[in-house]
Image 1 (tube, rainbow, N blue to C red):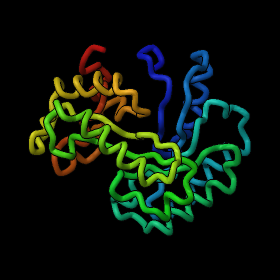
Image 2: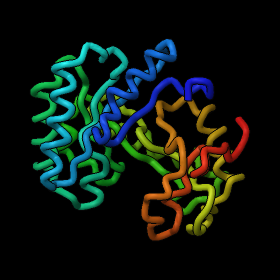
Image 3: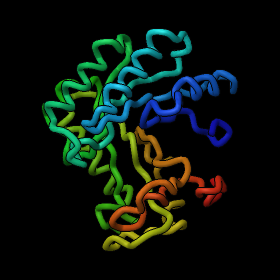
Image 4: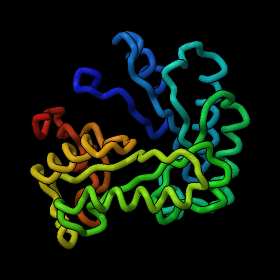
Length: 232
C-alpha cells in the first residue's frame, strides 16, 4: 500500500488481531502511515468482545503512535442494527477508555442522527455518488455537494469521508454505470478533489453479498486476486 502512495488506512473490526498486525507492518515499513482503528458493532453479543479487544490493546501495547482515531461501528443506523441512543452509548463507552484519541462512527449522510453527532469528536461519513444514479461526469459535483451539505449538520466539527468509491462491475443505477473505466475516472478525480477521504476499497471482497445492484464486491482498487484493475 505504501508503495502505491497510501498514507492512511481504516479498518472495520478487531477480528484476527488485525490492529496490532497492521501497526507492526507499518513500523517494519519505516512508518509514515496512520490507521483509523475500528470496532464492529451490530447490537449483538459480539459488540462487547470487539470493544474489549480494543480496550485491552490500548492498555497493554506501546505501539500506538500510528493510530489517528477510532471508529465505533459502520452504518449501523442506515442498516437498522441499533437505535441512535444505543449507538451514542457505545461511542461514549469507547471514549471512556480511549483517552487521547478522537472517537467517531461512520454513517451515511442521510442517517447521521443529531444524538450521535453530539457525542462524536469528529464526523466521519460514507459518501458514494454511484448510489445517487448520476453519470460519472457528475460524480465529483455530487460528492462535493453531499460533503458540503453534510458539513452543515456537523455542528462545526471536522468532517472526514471514510468511504467513497465507484464499482468496477455490476448493474447500472440510473445513469451511474459500474465499469472499470468509470472506477478509474472516479479514482483520478477524487485524488484531485482536495477532499479528505478514504478510498473504498483496497481490494474486492468476494466474501460479501453482492447486494441489490451486484456491486458490493466490486469497489476494490485491486481485484479479488490482488491485481490492479487500472494503472495510476
